[in-house]
Amino acid sequence: MPTIKFVQADGTTHQVNVPVGASLMQAAMENMVSGIEAECGGSGSCATCHCYLDKAWSDKIESPDDNEAQLLEMVIEPNEFSRLSCQVKVQEEHHGLIVRLPVSQY
Image (tube, rainbow, N blue to C red; front, side, top):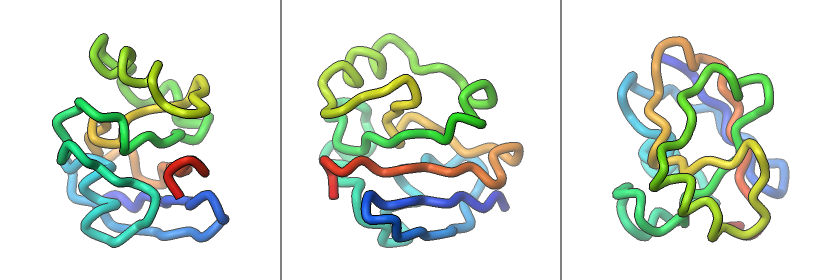
């Protein structure tokens, strides 16, 4: 089971084991990681699960689809590593992924 490291805006870290196929949002919610609101429950329609993937992982995770890209235009302080955590499904090769949470959701 891959281990994912969530880094909250204040620097607090949470390392969680995530089942393959679960979303980053599910992993955060199930492990009580603050900073992901997930108002739409993971349907990819609200952008309240915005996160930043660590730069080292940018080529190892599938790019956002058109719907996610449009929602990312609405988030506060987006950058080139912004993703909606509900849209990133964990795979075995994601072991060690670092996910940073924005100040705007803290």
